[in-house]
Length: 292
Ligand SMILES: Nc1ncnc2c1ncn2[C@@H]1O[C@H](COP(=O)(O)OP(=O)(O)OP(=O)(O)O)[C@@H](O)[C@H]1O
Ligand SMILES: [Mg+2]
Image (tube, rainbow, N blue to C red; front, side):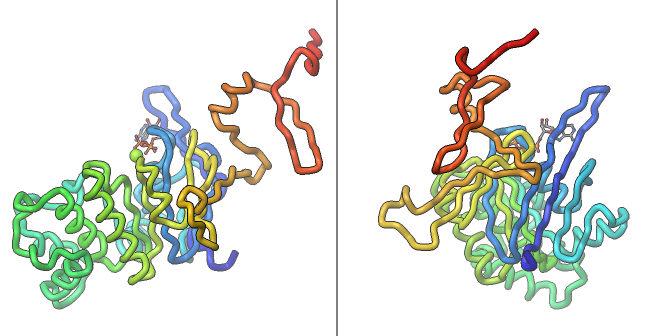
């Protein structure tokens, strides 16, 4: 599709540590449209941060393809990848300390990256960014005089300082209570609309599905399923979304673990068809002829 802003194809990332290999991404395919607000969920260790780091130019994949806008990230040398990261990407992390300097005020924290991005009227621009995240009134408070949610808002303003076109938020609400988390999600959604930023939010909060149009579920380094908001809203909130299982480019689909357990499926299945589609059945004595 022409308006896909992010295209990941068969993305593989292998970490090697003292002879041990970890396959963090195992052939992940992902397409994200320009201006989309995408939620990413998945168990711990499933590869979410690895994906974010690759998209943000902080890390490189072992194999596969990854395009962001006009950039083919695998083709960029280290210098070009740094330039891509500094000009295109904003990051929001779970630990606000990763984005902020504790002994500076909110506005000073934003002025630092505004200056680094080479923009003029630094102070005005920093105040404008704080206003965007609803923090202008606290501009002169030091970080330790701000709540966790307020600090995370400042961190979002910092992430916007280089005028990124892609904002990557890795568990931005991980250290916040539910109500504060809700306000941070709302702020991110407002920025997505008002600035037209493409935004990816990693979270463990399943309620993200009610705040974004699409949520993808990463399992074992691949997309397993996605939940999409229905175009025609339903009165019942639970019916307002539809879930799909992802078929990868080789035609493989991940069967949810609970189904494998429920139907006692191990390493083989019987595939059948009926008028409605394809049926995946457990192997039973009846249909399993073992030959030595
Ligand atoms: N720098 C690294 N070196 C070695 N292994 C790594 C490295 N970074 C991640 N891994 C491994 O890769 C796998 C995926 O890690 P990743 O951080 O992407 O998961 P995640 O989905 O973000 O998990 P969480 O929800 O806990 O943040 C894990 O098994 C992890 O241990
Ligand atoms: Mg992570």
